[in-house]
Structures are given as structure tokens and as C-alpha cells.
Amino acid sequence: MTGTTTIKNGPNHVAVIMDGNGRWAQSRGKPRLFGHHAGAKRVKEIVRACPDHDVKYLTIFAFSTENWKRTQTEVSGLMKLFRRYIASEARDLLAEGVRVRFIGDRVKLDAKLCRLMDEIELLTSGNDRVHLTIALNYGGRDELGRATKRLAREVSAGRIDPETVDETTLARFLDTCFLPDPDLVIRTSGEARISNFLLWQAAYSEYEFVNTLWPDFSAAEFATVLTSYGKRERRFGAVPA
Image (cartoon, rainbow, N blue to C red):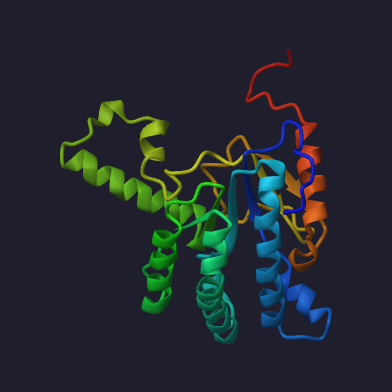
């Protein structure tokens, strides 16, 4: 850990759309997968920086439900990277007090990757220093659809009275039911869109769109973004005091 000063009024939960890996690699004359490997290394740095700034929860967008549209070479390479990352980083994450969990639909993921996901979730389940949530085959609309189906089954079975259903009821069926809503959502690479990420949960999140490509997004820039967040006045629909 770097030992930097805790940021005043900093976020408790930061979510990140890690964009720009492919462009970073192509600008260097390398294949897109080269950028994804560089981006994975950057994840490790940002996770390690979180305790310095009292960021308890970090959620990263690793692979969306729309990313299957990419070339077979890139998709296969990403799945291999995910398996390698989990296997190689598990012990370090355990030692550093990081609890790892995944959100998203696992149906399309291969059995070996799912097994590794289960193993690292169990291995780190007792940790509480940083909660790292990895969105893998995740899409906000897909999540809401799956959550609605689960809720409908409970209503159909008579376990939930439909007249009592409200927003807190549906939230219990989301992939993120174990997480607080994100305070801050960061997107790298200069793109200013949310790309179907945490649509329900980010209803009142602050957003920061930065031009830096993800493999270049350093812990120092992360701290700068958190400092900027700390200067914002969050009113949640109310008027200023």
C-alpha cells in the first residue's frame, strides 16, 4: 500500500467501466489481446490502491453480454485471460484481504472458468478489506430480466404478495443484492456512455468520464478522480442546504 492520505468525503463503492484496452494495444502495433493483458495488470494496481482511500467496494466491468459479438479469437483469448487471472492472483488476493465475487449470467461461460470462479469466491469469502466484484457476462438489462423472472416465480408460488412489491423487493433479486449501490462510476478511454452497466444500481451515482485508456489509468489518476468526487454535493433529489 502507498500510505496516501484518505480522501475527504470519498466514495465507499466505486464501479469502473474499463474501456480502451484494444485501442491501447493497436496504437502500439499490437493485437487487442495484448491490451487486455495490460488492463488486467492495471486492475491489480487499482485494487491495491482502494484501502488507501477508504474505498471498500470496487466493481469492475470485465465482459458484457454484448461482448460475445467480438471475434472468436478475442473472445477465446479473454476467457483464457480470465481463467489465468483467477488462478494466478487467488493467493495474493486472499493475503491482501480482498473478497472476490462475480455478477452476471454464468450459463454461457465454460465449466472450467465457472469452477475457478466458485473456488476464488469460497477461498476469499472471509475477507473484508476490499470487496472486489467482477462483472462477467453481465448486462444491466439482462440482470433486470433475470431478477424479474425470479421475483415472478416467488409471487406465483405465493411466497410474496404482489401488492407488497416495491423497488426494495426487486433489489433483493439482483445480482448485486450483497452490495451497496455505487457512489461513483468511472469510465475510461474518453467514451461518455454507460453501456448497459449497473442500470438499476447507478440511478443516483456520480459519473466521471476520463480520456485515459484503461491500461494507462494509474493509481495516481484514480486518486485524482476520487478527490474530484469528494468535492461534489450529492443531493439525491433534494435542494441544497
